[in-house]
Image 1: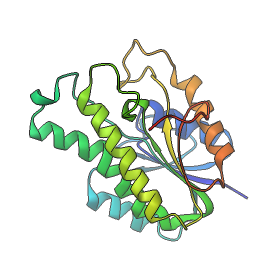
Image 2: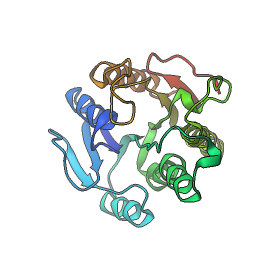
Image 3: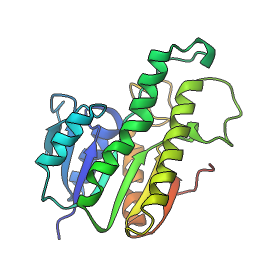
Length: 219
């Protein structure tokens, strides 16, 4: 039976490579971008600004009646390495809405389209681990990912009986627009490992916070 995935945030970087890798493995992929297909091939492209509740509702209406085996939300922004005391309220709100609030809005909007035994997943980061936060830097980004993880925990608690697999994925430090040119990983190498984890965890109940090797990341 054909497997169907919704990949939110596939304009570039990890989401772009993820959509392509799933398609290569035979998934039917619906990929969202912010206004253009950005070179995506072999997938169904939908336009979405994830931070807009109205656009999320519009996409949900367009996909009514579709059945999804996977919803994967990939989205994050970073507004620089500055102490939290120097972050404006405007920037704080922008980062929190993009990195924490919006992914959960998407999951709530589409969870009823996910088949029994299907998976909902969000791209997180070990930067969101409170116990691993032992080096200085990127305080707002770390806080936004910790907030994402906590909100995902609340989501999983609230929907504990729905039979869906729930995952937070730490993809490692990748050479993307967000990760920068000095990162140790290439998306073309890390994303296939992430898809291996998604496929291996299919049907496993409860929420797990895992890295690209399927290892547990400490909260």
